[in-house]
Image (tube, rainbow, N blue to C red; front, top):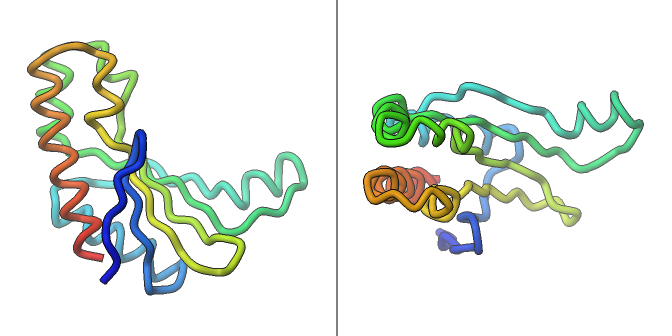
Length: 134
């Protein structure tokens, strides 16, 4: 099992599965932690269609845990600008698959609100659990 790497503003984990299987695994792991997928952006298809560029497979998943989102927005309605929690599944140039998730604590640190920070800490914990389950 590979470790979860803490990045400046996110979390990263390598996947032993292929790209498509990893997407399904990520969705299932997030669901176990109370997150639903609100958006899916196929970056590869979008860049090909809009500017003719070929890039390796890359998808952005917009994940939301409704109780956590409600708590954060109740604490500070402007937090909605920082939602949802985005995650990425992407294939690297060497064909390996990487999963990355924004770190809610890093993202919400600009809010400077203790109640929002508490929600962000819980969201990060849940995202770390989801990544660990892959």
